[in-house]
Each structure stands twice: as structure tokens, then as C-alpha cells.
Amino acid sequence: MRNFLVAGNWKMNCGPGETKKLLDGIKNSDVSIPERVDVLVCPPMISLTVASDELQDAEGVALGAQNVHSEDNGAYTGEVSTQMLNEVQCDYVILGHSERREYFGETDTTVNAKVIKSLSDDLRPVICVGESLEQRKAGEHQLIVRKQVEAALSGVSEDGAGGLVIAYEPIWAIGTGETASPDQAQEMHKMVREVLADLYSDDMADGIRILYGGSMKPHNAEELLSQPDVDGGLIGGASLKADSFTEIIRIAGELSS
Image (cartoon, rainbow, N blue to C red; front, side, top):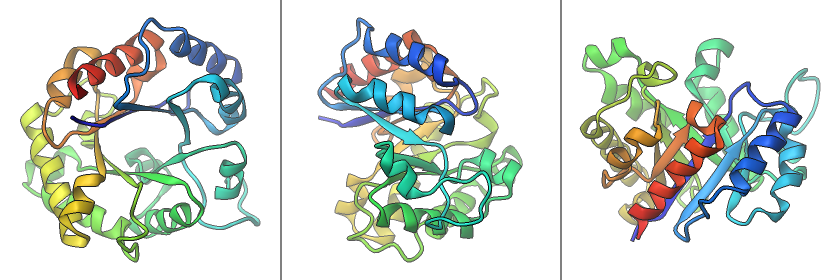
């Protein structure tokens, strides 16, 4: 029996009106949330309040943000705090996405500070790690991802690590239509789990869900989710359409039984 997490990262899509329509489509789908599948949606910041209201009657669908600051408050124009996310009933927050690293200069150090702050304020971080195509071709992919995981969790004790999620996202497969093969995904997820076991324990590593991100869609979800160390997906484009997102949820449900 497996417990999957199917998460939608909406990125800079869906204002409040579109968010309501998309969540209505998910809630009214013919696909019910399977017992052993957790569902997460992560709209843009401006839509979190609407999403929170819409999800009050949606059992099994959690709310997450796409970023958070490591300070409580202050002169940080354009940022949001963990307390603000708690106020709109966010359960999760995506941290360290490659687009945040590439476009906004986030580093392993800033990601680590956000991880520690999120865990201390009862937000479950979805920590993104992944390599570029150049790094993969150079044979550095495992070393790069190992360092990212270790850096993100620096100073996080085993007691504090409960509830966190790792999302392996090969940068070369994000938004490109390219997808890691099932074998490539399994190889990297297995390696990430070994890193977690080294940092904590085998039991803790087994309990931390490792998601695959990088163009997961209904047509390839089954073969990816069938891999023993793939515990779900961080879905980009396919999460912006209710029918494709709920189809992935349905597939995860079948595999979990």
C-alpha cells in the first residue's frame, strides 16, 4: 500500500477568478480523491485567500504557497511571511524551485533559511532539487542533487524533519515537454532517499515523500508513479486543467491500492 502526494504548482497562472473556476472543476470532477492519495494545490499569492475559501468544503485537498520569506515581517517589499500563509490556512510551501534559483537568485543558503523557518511555523516545505542538462551530461547530476538536499536540510534535526517533502525536478524537463525516463527518475529518487537515510535514519527516509516534477502528465504518470521511490508528482502545466490534474489523481489512486 502506497501513499501518494499529487501537487499542482500553478506558477504565475490563475488570478482569483480563474482560481475559483479551476478549483470548481477539480471539486466537481467525476474523480473523487482516493483514500491513499493526498492532493495539494499551490496558486499564486494573490489567489491564496480565494483558494482557501473554496477549499473549506473540499476534503482531501490541501493548500500551499509557492514561496515564503525567512523573516517574520519587515521591509521586504513583495514578500510574504509564514504567519501570513498560516492565516490563509496554507499547509505547504514550495521552496527552492529552479525558477526561483535561476530568475531570482535564490541560493542553497536562502533555501535552507526558508526551510528552517517554515518547519518552525508548522508549514510543510516542498523542497525542490534538480540538475541542469549540462550537469547531467557531465555526470554531475547525483553530486549536484545530493549537495542541494544536504544544504537545504542543514541544521534540521530528525525530530524537525517530519512532514517535509522533497521534489526532484530535472531542470531540463521543466516546461520543455521532455521527461526523465522512469529509470532515470527512479535512480535519482533512490539516491535522494539514501541521502535522507544518511542524514537521519532509514525509517525517516522511508517516511519522507519524494515527488517527481518535470512534465508529468496523464500519459506518463502511471509509468513514473509505478517506480518504487516515486511518491507522487509536483505537476506544472497539467495542473492548470481540471481534467488532466484529476486524471493523474485517479492514476495515483489505482496504484496506491
